[in-house]
Length: 498
Image 1 (cartoon, rainbow, N blue to C red):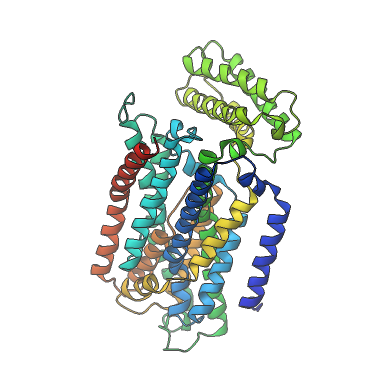
Image 2: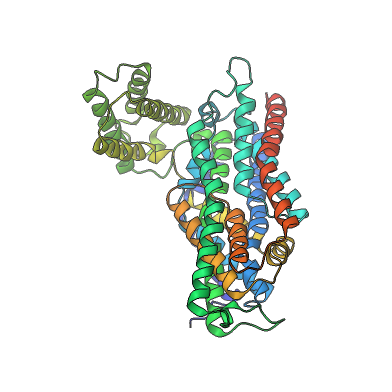
């Protein structure tokens, strides 16, 4: 069996990756290349520090779920377990892509997403970050596994509702209800799936190995499990940590991009690393979408179709003949971003209303064209990924003990067995990985805690109702409390920045 790298070897890998990425990614210089006033520069770094702080808190708040099983089965010593989990969380952020990050951004009302360089945009990201950090720290302090995903989603809804209460807005207007519903559905279904799937896997394991097999034993105090079981538990812990990084890490990436676009719109509204080929790909997507609309001109006579075509004409005028984004005047780059996002939003409304009457093949082609259209707006520089990965990884190694005690000792009435730990983590890693691939945020906390509860029920061990009740209350309160907190903070800070 391959032995995991030592902590020193892992640190060397992390440092090497960080150095290579920063050296290769000159776009980090954009932070210092736009003549920001001293006040704006200070605000930028404060906001970035808060965003990295959110991911740091996320690390020690959520990753405790991943290491609880290996610690409480004596598969790994606590220090080794958290370092291993930190390494795989770090790796997960780097390989996870940005689909979840962009999905988080799209939950916000469009007028907030395109509010770069304004007090409203800055108030948006600060309200999201502060409300999420406050709730995460509070639930961590009392040792209750709560969901960072629910926390962030609740904050986003709260900011959207507060924004819709401004003069000239209709209450609830602008909130992407379809995306909110899709996200909330995934957050509700995933723990139910984790409970049932982990319970069924536990029953299957009992049938395969029998009641007397070592897999079904409670760990002896300070005695590591047999080599095969130990290897399995280490592998499942690594898998959950990797999946957690690939999903939760993207939420931090999305928040950092909102900050950069709000405070340095000229530098980050569009991907400064886009090549001439990328620009040509965007223009081809514009042409293809316009042709699709024209083929259905008899049905596409709505105001949305007119908005799309008007915005596309402006995008084409800005991009035609450009060899790189750098050639676009700084004063125009954010306008290009606005035009692309507004056109894409109008196109989405047109498609959902049936205004184009597309066939299934045309819908698939249009979806691909829309992805190409947003290639220069849906991006994240590699240094942002590295910064979030480091914050999440370092957070993993701090403050994990409170949540570990709850997960390992207080969910079930009996001590966690080897089989229970392995089954819960296999299901959690699989569920989170699928969600990351489809661009949906899920809660590591909910999936894994529910999975452990499912294995306890399947094993006849029973669950501690008081703990489950407290966790359930926290889960139910997370969204409404963070909605209220974020909405209040947004209103106060928007007035202050205005």
